[in-house]
Image (cartoon, rainbow, N blue to C red; front, side, top):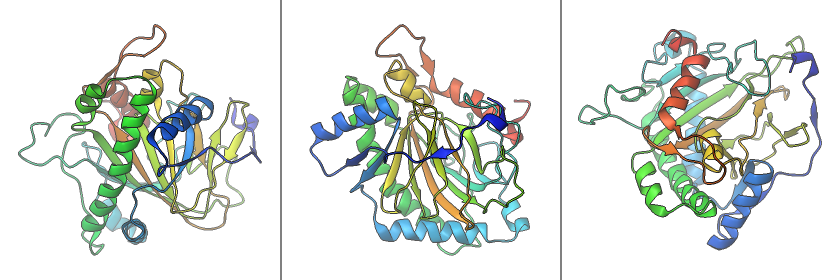
Length: 316
């Protein structure tokens, strides 16, 4: 799709909302419906402590306000941990648009911790995190939030497998050592002269299993629905926006959608969000539960996406 032909955002009924305090059977049915129709849902009553969430937001804002020279001292490394500067990632693997311009947002990437005695150390995308020492309590605040959102992700992952009729034993195999990302995102306000095809995050789908996003009240996230229109996602900071990603959609045999989404910050204000990606271990293989699709090894798909989209990985 050419940039000039990109449809504008339209008014649309709210995305499906799921109450995580409901009975398990109701949540399973609601997830199946939401991911089949939209690929996204908004969750209430998640296991998120408001204090840890706000502390994580405050630490993210503090990091992004640091001088560029300090942020660059934490530049993203070969283990995919650290600062991702503006215009250093481009959604070249986008299935919905021919993306030419790099993303204008900046972010700080954390992943599951891999320390010296971990047998995964040195393998692709496996290494210790970088922690911003200039932000007081940065590691403790992010770890506290991580533990909270991980509880919700694990519950949702189990219920997703149940909805697809997959035995719980595969959950234990895939998620005993999950691949996890926590991305602290900052989007500058879009300026009037910004090109139409310039985005904080260009149209893309997520690569893995589930994404759990908490955003501030600024807005700007848009989802492409089945009729081709872009729908703005409105959610309060105490709600979690959850979407099915590519590997999970493949596992479902096409029953569930990994929907394209993008961020355009037209608000006039700075936008911050906390994006948590809960994915299987690198060796996990998705064999579609229906249809005759080919198996998809998570690490193969992940690395192909990263090697194409991130400038620091060019030539790998």
